[in-house]
Structures are given as structure tokens and as C-alpha cells.
Image (cartoon, rainbow, N blue to C red; front, top):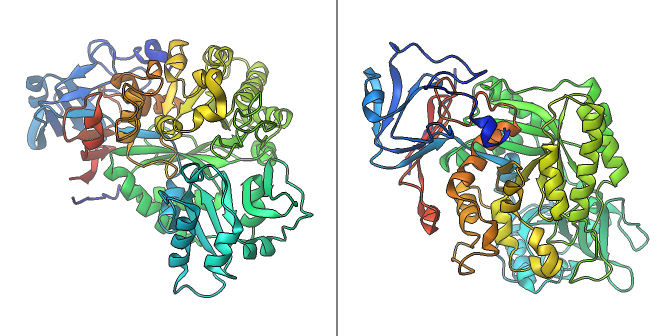
Length: 566
């Protein structure tokens, strides 16, 4: 495989998505269609072209002129737009969709993770410690060893301890994040540098896991990670740029034309901004500032950088955290964990403080996305959003709940009624299914990863992967959405299969829905004349089965330019 990265010189529901295009004209609010005499620069014929236009959902031909869709229709009509310099791609039945967008991921985080010790898939605590030891060999003494990817659930469910890392690494400080990023495994050297002792209290929104005597075991959950993080040397500007470039090249190679970058600091924002200004980002990045209640209060003094439809970098939102993660039992639940009596998770941000932060940020003109996994956290987030909407009646806020993994039936209905966007990651369901019901019990699990329930209530699902927590390829997400099975095909028939999406719904969730969430649904997310020419081309026709996992991408087009071709 070879790639060529080119440098550049509503729900609104299905009903609202159908506003534009009567008889193939330009979409309302979008750029006007080119005059019929114009010739295309790139044409696709003989394919299965998904348009996301309810009036013309499937066509065989697509014509692009520059950075806009010129026409869609049958092959003859599209071929008529070819000029002497037009490139014509014969699809032979292959599927083409609007450009795939990961609606919740960590692009910079993926670039960073590629440079860290990779602990994904390790079979035991000792195996993970052995990987860390091997990675440390030859590194300068005293240099921090940073890694990510461990998961205690396949190890039997118990958190690891510092003892195994001490034996493997000695005095070298180590900070190894759990696969979901919501817990950190450290050794005694790291605890000492951070000044964490038996007397150190749990910080607000965090937990220092302790042994029966009260000593830190070596695992820090959620906000407790900050006690160590502040002692880890910050990445240089050069390192940030290197990581973004590498991650972006990987992303376009799997068909992504854009990402919603969830939670970055100002130093990373500055690098993204510079790369975009120089025309050196091959995909579109809609970024959300890494937020906190204090930052939310300061946003009135800061201007958003909105997406005008053609932007390669935008910063118009902020991400807050209501709770932690289900895998580390940090998700805030309304009742005890079924497998951990007395534990209801963690409030990373207390409900009253969260409400004030949401109101402050949205009043300043910033879109708010809130990480909320447990049912208590989702309820508190919706409470905060109701308060913001009441204060700003008539303002299009497009508030987002990130993950929304565990919800009550009442809150699913409330989410839809409020017009709150559910940003959900299909592969989280299939990754978590071996242990999720043990955490939640047989009743609460019915409202977990409940995609069909959200759609049936009239809600909008924006799909993503949360990479590098999950795999970067959106094909894994499409497959999980339509089968609710792991890559091995388990369980037979799917896990709670009534919650599956159709293939068209899953494609919509990775294309049109992120455009709605990014306030660019009148410019991107559909293949209709006048819309931005972001396109993903697959190597075969897509089908709602295991073949999705074996389907690659042959071309990724962003703004009319081929940024990846196999």
C-alpha cells in the first residue's frame, strides 16, 4: 500500500437533513452548484454512492469540481461532465460515501500513544511489567517510562500494583495509563516524585487506590492521575507536530476525512493552528478545548474559531468531565456497582459545579461536550444542559453528551426531547460486553450502549471510536454498530441485538451526524451539488456483516484533493 498526502495551497433528524436538494439543486445555505457547462475534475461511475440525501439516497455516479460536489446521478449524466483533463474512476460496484468523520477521538493522543510503551493485549500484570522492562532497556537512567493500554479485566479484574513495576524498573519512574485513559499504574519511584504518601488525601474527582493499611498500591484513578502528570516533562512543540503529522497520515489511510479532537491543551491547539494555516493538515480537525470549571469561566474573554465549512482546523467547543470510566469503576452510577457494593463511582465534576461551568461556557458562545458514562452522570449532564437552554432560549447550542454509555429510559427520552447530541462509540459496546453486565446487573444493562433506543426516541447519534482507546479504522465501528459482535463473531446473533443500527444509520452516524454536531451540516456530510467534496471510497460494496472488517479504503478525498490512494 502507498499513500500520497497532498498539501493544500440535523438532526436535525432525517427530516431536517432532507431540506436541501429539490431536483438536484444546491443545498439551502450551501455554496451554489456550478453551471452545467462546467466540467468535472474527478468523476466516479459504476458504483454504490451513498448520498445521505433522502430524496436520492443511492446513485451510481458522482462528479467533483475543485473542492465541491458538482453532480450526482446516473453514469451517463455524470460522464457527460467529463472534460479532457477529468480523471474518471471506474468503481465496478464499490461503495462511495461522504467523507467518514470520527466524532470522538484523540488524534494527538494517537500520535503520542504510538511513541509510548504499548501495553494493549498483555495477558497479565506480569506480562505488562515485562513489556515495560524491555522498553526501558537502553534508555537513559532516570528518564520517565510512559505507556498506555493495560486493562485489568482480562487479568481477572484486580488492579495491578506497584510491586511488579518496582521489580521490573527499579528507580526509573513509570506512568502507564489504562486503555481508556482513566486510570494510571505507577511505581514507587513515581509516587515518591509526586509526594504521594499514606497521608495524601484523595483529590476531588479522583481516587488513590490503597491497600488495607492505607498505603497507595500504585493505581491512580481519574483526577488522582494529575498528582503524577504534573511531574512528567511536557512535550516539545516539535514532538507535538511530529505526532499530529503521523496520526493524521494514519487517519486518512483508513478513510477519515475529519475528526472531532476531544480535549486538547493550548500548546497542541497552537500546533494544529499553524499546520492548518500552512496547508499541511490532510484532514479536517474540529477540536474541543480540554476544559475545566475554571477554564469555562474564562471563555468569555476568548474567541471561538468556528468552522466555515471549508476549515481544516476549528476550535469552537470545550470538553468537560462529569465522571470517570466504567472499566475502572469510576463512572458515576445512581446505585452501587453490582460487582462492587458501596461504590457508585466518581464525580470528576460535582453536578452543581458542572451546571455552572456549562452555563458559563455556552453563554460565552462555546459548544459544550461533556464526558458522561454512568447513569447518574448522564442525568446530571442533562440537568446542566436544561439550565443552559433555559437561560439561552432560542440559541442553537448543539450540546453533546460524550459516551452516554449507561442511561435510564427516562433520560434517553429527555436527551432526545432536549435535542442533545449523543456522541457514542460503537466499539465500546463490543469491547466492554465481556464484563459490563457484571458492573451493571441485568436491569441497568438494558439502557447501556442503547443505540436503537436513542434513535427510536428521535435522538441523534454521532459515532466515533475514541481512538487510541479503540482502533482507528472506522470499519470496526461500522461493524460493531450493525452486528454488536466482536471481530471473532461473538456472541452469535449479537449482544443485545435489538440495539443494533442498520448500515445506513451507521454510515449516517459517521458522516452526516458529525457535520450536524460541528455546525457544518449545510456544507458537509452529504454528497449533493454544492457541498464540500469530502469523499471516502471503499474497495468493495459495503454489506452489514463481517465483510466490513476485511474492507479497506482505496481513496480518501478531502476538499476535492486525493490525500490517500491505494
